[in-house]
Amino acid sequence: MDVTTQRYDCGDVAQRSAGIEAATDAVRRGDLVVLPTDTVYGIGADAFKPAAVTALLAAKGRGRDMPPPVLIGSVRAAAALIEELGPYGQDLMDEFWPGALTLVCRASRTLSWDLGDTKGTVAIRMPLDPVALELLKQTGPMAVSSANRSGSPPATTAADAEAQLGESVSVYLDGGPCESDVPSSIVDLTGPVPRLLRAGAIPLDRLTAIAPVTGPDADEGTGTGESPETPDISSPGTENGAGNGTDGGAAGDPAH
Image (cartoon, rainbow, N blue to C red; front, side, top):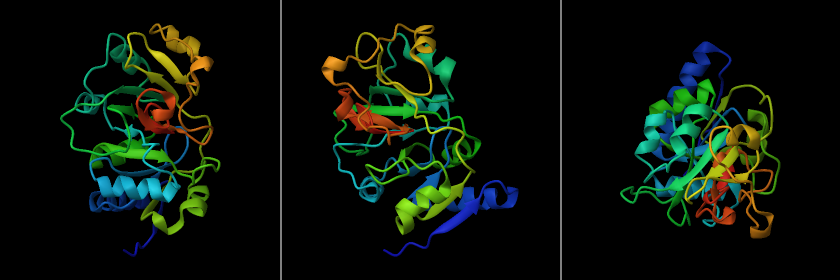
């Protein structure tokens, strides 16, 4: 299917409004969009359209073993996606959301979605970016990974993203250059004690001030599933050992 690529400068009020509308329509059709976040740019799709998620993975050049994380537009939306937060999840969300913290949780067994080989987990995040939040409130949960080809540096501008992803994306929302290319911190909530899977924008000492988060165990090879390109927008995945695959156990690819 041919995709006509559209680009919108979200620094312009009229273009931002038109861009959000175009991106919302694109997501509902099952197309891919690029959006700014508070970490790096992300490539996103409707989390509940398996064909769209497959197209997202193909655009990045990655397989089902690295499922994308899921971005949400409100804290309330998280409740419908996960089984439980455990004893510390709510405190972490209250302190750091919206923001650069990705949480890996057991996914709700009632959901009819296919993010890839998630092993029953999902990596979720609420980004602190006005354009991203406005879009997510229109579309609902989106599978979002860093807007780059696998193995390449994350995109910190919409132009960077377009140079790598080209016409595989229907709508590019340009929110200006990212202030930082540091990905989100990823914390696994699927065990008895929260565990840091990837160090990122939120230091471990800030996390431990809220919950007893343990540091990553190098002997277990716990990472975030996606290397430095993995921004935190994404979820940890099988590589993190958290079970899902975004860029971490639940998601395999920290989208940011």
